[in-house]
Image (cartoon, rainbow, N blue to C red; front, side, top):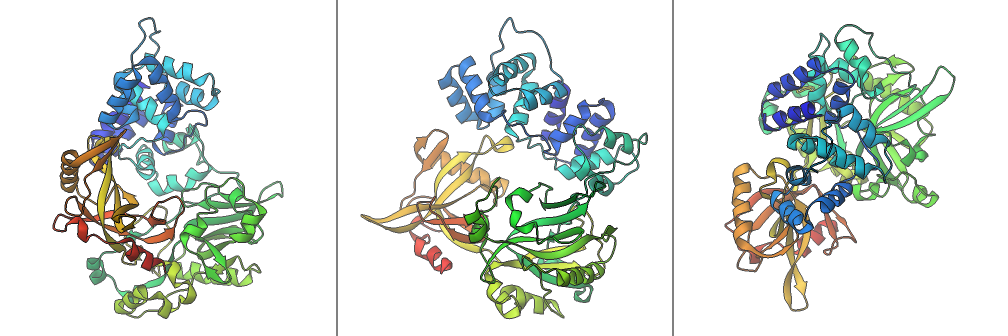
Length: 542
């Protein structure tokens, strides 16, 4: 475990992509099975533990150390794993046992809620500070070492002659500790094959397009379609060797969400794999994303919910049909197959995402700005922007640059006043980087600020330092780790906040919830009294 912890520690300080790959590859090359497989699972987010939660860690440190000292330390450090790892008081008579990563993963997966705390304390006693930090990161599920799952798979591929895309293709059928994967990559085992009749295939993603990119792109080489405000899904169906039919609905990361959407099972009446957007459609109209959220992250759904929030798939692409893998075909060929398949389906729960006609980029600019007049009709409010796809592009896993682009509609902006701040995590644990902001509305005794959102990104490192300095000198109250800062009409900090949309919310005092808010600009030039009002946001909801 200490060696895996050392890897995480090195990676957290290493900024270069290739250097991170070399660090992981060296670890995988020199670490035996199953240790390296569980390390790969941790780096790719493939581990989850039902009984190992941050609350268990907090309870343990409260028993071993002074609770007030812990709270003060946690407030200063800002990260639970780092705080506990640094201040954990090892018992003098504790056995000097350094657990293996595989031992820890097995224990976290199998120990009951009542027996886990004692074993966790033993592990913490046996590890050094870095080892304790890595163990606690496993439990809290927040590695934050700057390595995506794709980067970890690239490191695995570098052990042999296979490509990262080939690793992506076999990945959905694998499970930790990935011994068959390492054997294949290193050349002493066959290519892993899945027996799942309805497997997930890695999705193809797009890059955000910039204004400068258009000069290098020929509009005649591309097709365009609407970017819908739902969640990306993959609908898969097939028949296994035993003759049993399997139907699955996956998120874009490969999570099986079929149980939450049983109303789509009959609609997926084909053998193959379809890429599309999951939406809620009522009375022939796509509902906003906040309506879809009523169905997301639910393990079970009631009959009433199925009736009130009917699920729908708007199809983008066809990856497999009748056992034939279509991903190597150009987009136009796959699109033709998709159109024919959707035309044969009898269920209204699946339809085709229409193409957006354009001859030059100015045509697409106008369509993006006004989807209602460009064919989106009553669904225009559910359009996030446009997708731009090369007509000859195969369906490739990951995010290759060039074949697909996304061009989102310009975000809304509002000038809001900073009200509360909290320390961030990882490298930002020393800075106040999580912000709650509000706008003015009429109260019983005049104008008051009401919170309308939270954001923790959108600013540069230099801007972060400026906001952090403001928070420290302008603090007027504290609530645990949260600082309240001055926010009067003539004193405070105005933030220009960009966001994708708004929804009604009973959980927010303002009655409004923002979608994807981020800090677009610091308005040092603007007094808080001139920030926007709640009525401005209310108007966007009408």
